[in-house]
Length: 283
Image (tube, rainbow, N blue to C red; front, side):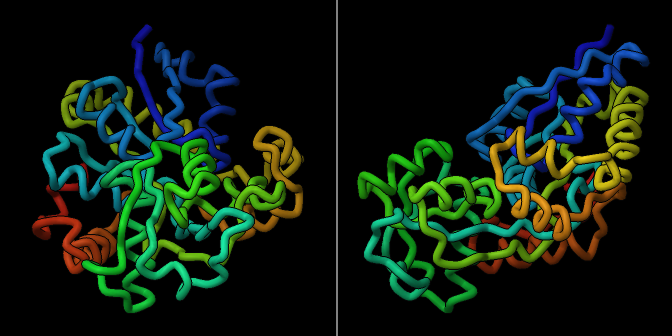
């Protein structure tokens, strides 16, 4: 049995992986696919790919592009979720801040430098014409649990994280969402270490075929909205809204999208250069 390690955030986007693993679909081809949760998100997964702790990551598009340019020996093999990620901009429930203008120049909680929460703080700043040098400050909080502590304790003032994942914290009066900031590109891709791609081509193709068959029909699974609501402790109407907004993909990410992401990151000084499509994507 060939052991393959895959990582992703423990969120509703990745339920399709859990379902295929539960059904034992990979074992039929002699693949022991082992899922690893990364609540710290993109930065932790980039590190895990570099350290060979995982072979495959379901990861934010902007984060893996940045890390590959910075030397991560991995490539994107396909888009996983085609639609943008809707990032909620959150403050502590009793915070004095009420609007985007109020948090200008204050401290953003980020899971780590190079993470999605870090990069999207720049996107939000750009969207609102802030001075990227003066108006952005950061406090590293590692994960969602750290963000709760950080905002309540006043170590940081606001936090960007996926809107529906954080909705229970808003419902429970821990966070207050003051705005949203959608990513200007497809949100999740599947990235794989280059050495794994070269030596396990057939295994990788089989893994992708299984997950793609499931995501293609994901919304048609009976009572999938109730399953998600129960598993991730979310309100049913929130899950239904999320399902209506989310589209999975089974295709290789296109060159235009790759270039658009890089242009944005380069303009914000997040990456040092724009590289060719084939540097980032396994063709």
